[in-house]
Length: 156
Image 1 (tube, rainbow, N blue to C red):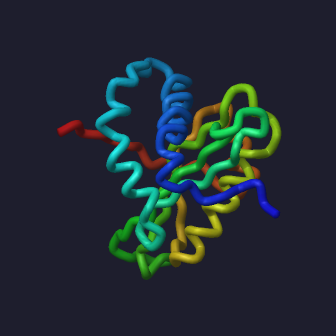
Image 2 (cartoon, helix red, strand yellow):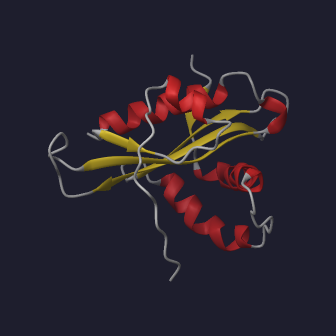
C-alpha cells in the first residue's frame, strides 16, 4: 500500500498550511496567512473535482493525526502543439512542500511520482516546474532538465 493518496476537500486547511511552508522558504516571501480564508472555499472545490485539470497528492503525517507530512500539487494545461508535442498537453508542478519535521523520508519523491503518473494518464508530454536550489537534485533525479527559457510575470 502506498503512503501517497489523492488529497480530498477535508485536507484543504493542511494543504494551505504546507503551501505556506513552501512560500515561507522562498527568498523575500510574504509570510502573511490572511489570504488562506479567501482561498479555502475554492481549494476545497478543486480538491473535490476528480476529473478536472487539478490534482494534489499528499502523505499523512506519521506523528500527527489529521496532519499532512508532504504535498505536491499540479495542473494540466493545453498549449497549441509543436514538434515533439503535437497534442500540446502540458503538466505544471507547484506547491511541493514537506513539513520540516518530516523531511528526508522520501515523501516528496513519492508524491512527485504519483503526480507524474497522473500527468501521463492525462496525456501530458511535458511537465514544467520551478525549482529551488535545494530541491533541484530531486527533480533532476526524476528526469527533469534545466531550460534556458526566462520567465516573465505580470500582476493584473
